[in-house]
Each structure stands twice: as C-alpha cells, then as structure tokens.
Amino acid sequence: MVASIDPGEKGIQELTRLATTYALAHGLLYLPVNGVQPPAPTSAIHAPLALFPTSFPRSKFLLAQKLQPLYNVLYARVATDERFLDKIMGSVDGVGKVDRFTGQLWGCWKQLRDEGIQQGWHLGLFRSDYLLHNPDCGKEVSLKQVEFNTISSSFGTLSYHAAALHRYLAKSTSYFGAFPGFNLGDLPQNNAPAGLARGLAEAHAAYGSVNAQILFVVQPNERNVFDQRYLEYELLERHSLHVIRQTFNELAESVEVDPSSRVMRIKHPVTNQAIEISVVYFRAGYTPTDYPTQTQFTTRLLLERSRAIKCPTIQLQLAGGKKVQQVLTKPGVLESFLLDRTRWDGPDFTEADVALLRDSWMGMWGLDEDGDGGVEKARSLAEKLVLKPQREGGGNNVYKSSIPRFLDTLPLAEREAWIAMELIETPKGIDNHLVRAGSGSQGAVKAETISELGIFGWALFGPGAKEIKHEEAGWLVRTKGTDSDEGGIATGFSVLDSLLLVDE
Image 1 (cartoon, rainbow, N blue to C red):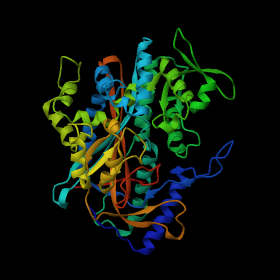
Image 2: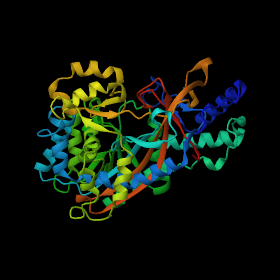
Image 3: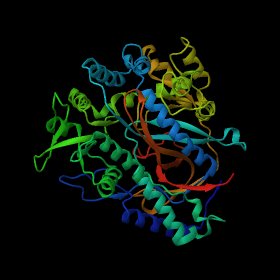
Image 4: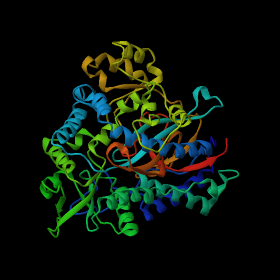
C-alpha cells in the first residue's frame, strides 16, 4: 500500500484547485449549513473530499464484492424470520423493551401483524462497511466488517462522482508523479447510481402499475440532497420513473391509503393530482430525531399499511440492528440462516460461504450476557473495544478509554441495548490530503488517515424470502483522520474518497 503521497506544495495547490472546480462542475455537492432557503436553495458547496485515491489491496476489494451477495440473502432471510426478530429486537423479549426507539418501531410492526397486514414484497438497498485489519502492524491484512446498513444507505451517487474526480485528476495530471508505477486501470469503475436505481426500478416493476411513482421520504432541510437527487435523475432518465419527495410532516397532510385495496396515493403539492405510489424509499426514519412526536410514527404506520413496496419495511430496518449483527456471530445462528435447507428455499450455500462471512467479523458480545460478565469483560478490555447502541447515522458509539466511565453510568436495564465489539486495528502510516469547503488558506489538509470501504447491494424478496432478486451495486470509500473514532460524512468526520487497487 502507498503510505505517503507528496507531489510538492505547488502540486497540492494545483490538484486542490482542479479537484474543487471539478466537484462544483459535476455535482459533487452539499448544501451549506444554513443554505436551505425557501422556496429553493440558492447556493451549494463541494462535498468533503480526499485529494488522492486511497490504495487498497485488490484481493480485499474483490472479497468485499464477493461477500455482498451472501449478505443480501442473509439479511433478506433475517427480515422474514419473525420469531427471530421478536426474540432479538422485540419489546417483550428483546432490545425493544429497554430501547424506546427500537421498541416503538417493533410496536408498529406488531400492530401491523395484529391487523393481519403482511408485506407482499420487501426492498433493501444495503451497504456493508469494512475496514482493513492489521493487528500489531504485521504483514497479514484482513477485511473486517464494521456494520451492515439496511436503511438510508447513502452516498452511493456522490461516491460515483468521487471516483470520477480521481480518474479525472489522474488523466489530466498523472498526479504529478505522486504514484510511481500508477496505472489508470487500477482505479475501479463505480456504478453505484445505476445499481441502486435498478433495485428501485425492479421493485416498481414488481408492484405492477405503470403509472405509479416512487416516493422518497426525506428529512426536512436535507443537506445531502444532491446524493438523493442524482438517484432521482437516474430513475427518470434510465427507467422513465418519476419521483416525489416528501417529509413525514408533509405526508401527514398529503397521503391516503385505501382501506380495502391498500393503494397509497399522495396529493401532488402543485397539481393536487392524486398520485399512486409503487415504492416508498426511506431516506429518513432511521433515527429518533425523525420522530419528534407521535404524528411521525402514525404516518410511518400508515405508509407500512399500504401495498406499496417499502425500502425498507420496518422488519428489514430492525434486521439491521447492531444486536442482530452480534447475535449472528454466535455459534450455529448464521448456519441456521444459510445452511438449513429445511427452512429456506434456494439459493444453496456451503460451509465455505459461512466461513467467508465469519472471517469478516470481529469478536462481539452483548453487555447483558452472563450476568455482569459482559460488562466486566468490556471494562477489562476497554482499550481494544467500541460499544454500539441500536442507532444509525454516526456519532453514537463509545470508544476505548471512555468505556469504563460510560459503564459506571449505564443503568442495568439498558445493558441489553448495547453490544461490545473488538476494535478493528487499521494499517498505520497512510497519508492523504483532505479538502473541506470553507477551509480557506489551509486548502488541503495533510493527515494520517483511515479509510472505510462500503459495498452496496440490493435485494427484492417476498414472504419467507422464498424468491430473492439481488445484486452487488457499487461501492463507496470514506476517509478520515486517525484522530477521529467516528466515521460519518454527514456528521462531519469523514470525506468522500475512492480506491487505487494495489497487489499485495
């Protein structure tokens, strides 16, 4: 791997100028913090970006792509195993009884089942995130999963632009000799927008109404709007599918679900036309702040009652919980989802497939395990751990030296909502230059970095996961300074990056 990149001060300045201009010209954009002004945005800034692509072992990139179809099917099966999810995430026996947000989601799902409503199809636009593991800075480097995302897996389209940016800089400047032996073919193509749009289009086709439209449920004042808009444009240009965007609050006023047919219709804000909805794509709804009142949960429940295909359904959202990730590591659990042919219709998997998945996991356990044993184990190994709650979106974890103090204040009743995970020890001495809008005279800031690879995939499946269509659907890279434990782009910790594949 390339540990240090230095084309000189003038080279950095010119690359920064070229990169930021390209980003602004090609939609690698964010809205500024206070940039959303009614009735429309009036300005934009370039998204945070890495000036150089990050070198990454070719074999590990190919492995991550190979793992994605296995994960697609695994989580489709987890989402349709009601007994398993009730036990792990429910409000009676599982995490939901101590984690209020999880309990509210599970309660909505339980109410749907009590009403006799079953989802005909489920759509997942997934992202499996990985870091390279290099314990004790040895020669062995392995690929380890950070988490698996089942809702609002973002930055697919901006990652496409980030890869195109690095390809442009390579073609136009050859990076001023910063990469000896550089080959343009070592920058892999990234087709995430096309792949993710194809998943949504397949769901629309399964719904079966040509004139229906796709609903994006979005957060108010969304700064990452361009990532979402590009997917909207892809759907229109490649698949002739129209998108309507609304927040939960807007939907509370505009949506209707026919009680007999369960057809969902939304009143268009301009034409007042009643638009039938084929697919509901949630880019909101993954965090408690998306539900400030009961009204938002009521609206979510109404959407779930409809026959529109949800991406994801509540149960698929619950399947992405950290507790599920941890329970899957227990002996025999993964095998029950992939190898038990009495439970699942094809595709068939092998012991080798199971071994590949298990090899991608770090050690994990629940803080509620073995009485006080789970907590005491976490306390004794704190410097090599991260504690994770059942939350998405970054900024929620507890790391290393902060763990003992956190455990001292964690109520006994809330332990079940947390898992402990061994920290992935990333390679040391990898440099990059990070460029954030508004950095002024600092320009590109050189930093020792850590890069996280995300592989996108989609899965469309029916009850019991008996019929599953799925694909691997592109990738993203997020890079941050080693001084940051958290890794979200939207939360300000990371920048968008791409890959330079190297042979080990």
